[in-house]
Length: 115
Image (cartoon, rainbow, N blue to C red; front, side):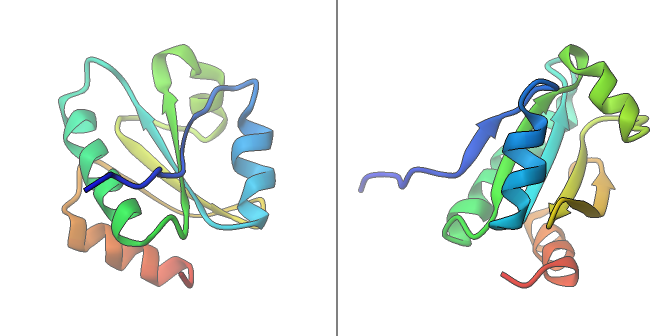
C-alpha cells in the first residue's frame, strides 16, 4: 500500500507569508514550531502526520525549525517547544504547547475549524 502524499511544508521566515498566511485562506494551517534537541517535538511530529493522513489533507502542516527562525518564534511570543499555532483566513485562531495525544489534537482542531 502506497502512502498518500501529505500536505507538509518546511516553512521559514522567508516563506511564512506564502506557505502559512496566504495558504490559510484555502484551508487551515497547523504550524509546528519544533527544535532538533526537543524530545517532545519528536514525539508530536508523527502524531500530527498521522492525523493529517487520517483527515485526508483537509489542512496543511507547516514545520518551522525554531532555532533557525527565532524572529518568527519571537513574533508569536513562543516560550517553549513544541508550540503549535493554527491559522485560518490569515489569522491565528488557536494554539497549544507540548506533545499531545491524537484524540486531544482532534478535539482541538474540531473546536477551532470545520474540516
